[in-house]
Length: 314
Image 1 (cartoon, rainbow, N blue to C red):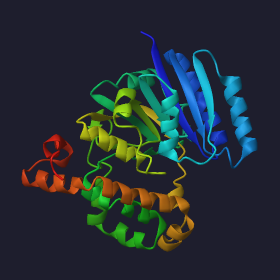
Image 2: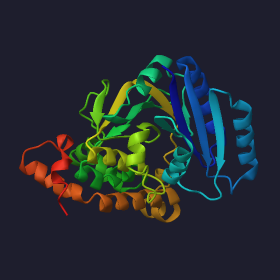
Image 3: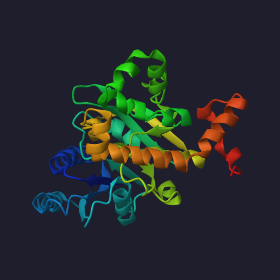
Image 4: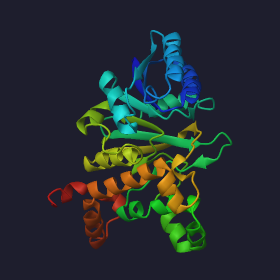
């Protein structure tokens, strides 16, 4: 059976990274005998025309019959979610893979990749892999959206940017709660159902993506991945974490690069996007706090809660 896959990159000043990523991905796709269309939505187009031309030329030279590469310039920076949505509207495969520009595949095994692609069906609509650094450090890439853990999520950020981090690091209770969002007690070496997976490499079923109207474009950056996985839960559909597949992500963590909480908020635009998206998520899914209370009263585990019972809550 012929296997088709649409792949989307949203670029913002990462031209060299994206070229390296696509060159390695093309090798992987050939080994898997997957027909692919790669879409590059270039949010840098208005800022760096020279680099954009180089990226466009790369797409033209490396596009093949079964591995097409389409360059899609944007007249302004659309952000992550809106950029991805734009590409999906131009594509047509049953499955769509969203990839960060700084993702590498030189250690990814083609059999694992093929198995990963075949995980998606009408019930399992989103999947994510194990994510590593080039030095083999395993990053957190699957998480819980328990409302309390989402509420304290900024503390994970603060740990890296402010003096307040010393207090957090000294508190075993806070550390335990902060780390709970990444399933610190879960065996991450086995395939499992999770609440949400990192958007740096996310495979999504098109039918579900279109049904839930794609990424919520109110998030310019950050929380897009949490939100779309929360939409899947709302429809009683599954998100899968598959550690059998591993990819390399050279994450820059731009929102935590400025030291000092006040300086980070005032001087780091990525930090402000992160906070803004966090607030938007809390407001959008505020009913989750009611679900949490109802689940605790009936002695349910939040992660196993059937939200369909609570649809009538206003």
